[in-house]
Image 1 (cartoon, helix red, strand yellow):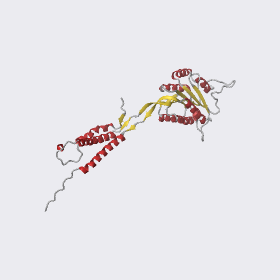
Image 2 (cartoon, helix red, strand yellow):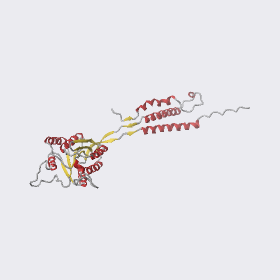
Image 3 (spheres, one colour):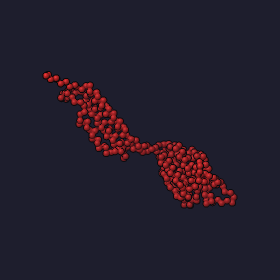
Image 4 (cartoon, helix red, strand yellow):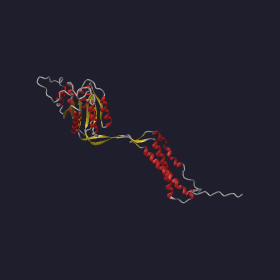
Amino acid sequence: MTLPVAFGQPFALLAMPLALLPLLARWLRASSVPRLDLRPSDGASTLIDRGLTAMGMLALAALILGLADPFLRGGSVPYRGQGANLVLLIDRSSSMDDSFAGRAPGGEEESKSAAARRILQDFIAGRPDDRIGIAAFSTAPMMVLPMTTSRTAIEAAIDAQAEPGLSQTDVGRGLALAMEMMRDATAIGSRAVVMVSDGAAVIAPDVQDALHRLAREQQVNLYWLYLRTAGAKGIFEDSRPGESDTPRTRPERHLHLFLQTLGTTYRAFEAESPEAVRQAVEEIGKMESRPILTERMLPRRDLAWLCYLLAGIAVGLLTLARWFERPFAPRRPAPLMRRI
């Protein structure tokens, strides 16, 4: 069992026996009466004497505890909020580093990946109760961040996607990884995978079978945010008569058709500008806002200041008692002058 209180400098606790010193040493002013036990018993005086001794012990003990640097451990507590279990699947192929115009960004232009990162950061900032995981894919899929409620980790994982991408787009295995990550989702709350990509590729038959199986097991809602480059064919456009329409010639359209067969809630968005991306993300957010059982992080809390405050109060009371003792102290008689 882990105790809620820990110490940064536990060796300082070895000095705790020093708190017993007030039991051994008298700190009050010496009395001119040689035998105090001959005086009548005074309950109030006994109580004050014991109280002052206890105050001295408390001051020393609190000071030693403060030097030991006590703190409450951080952790997490269950929390019922409003949001969803989300896995953001981000395309890191080299084409994502181009602008929506299909060229290297110049001037005030923004690459598709930069626009997506910026908008996703704003989206996450407005959804504090979401449990979010990050995955990326290009030549191979990669889990960037397992599902977590830590906003600092999520923001850092999205910012890390600014690195240059690779040439390939293995979207099938990327989707499989994102669905596998849903095994860490909470039991209460919707589950959704949001894929951000500007292209697709042919999915092997064995990967297709795996996606069908995972879709049945995980029951995820799937959203594809297709960042369409200017001049590229849309995923909703039918082929013209005589035009080749195969998974190799039009992979984006056939990926869209395949995702419709998974038997889960699926919706695709085409975005040809950063503003269109923002509108699509906002619409996804409206659809994926339901009660969710998540965790709220509790930071580590320092307790040393409380110990020092207690020690200061105890020392202040002892000082006040010493000051009140002065007017009632017996005065010594003045020495007699020797006559010459």
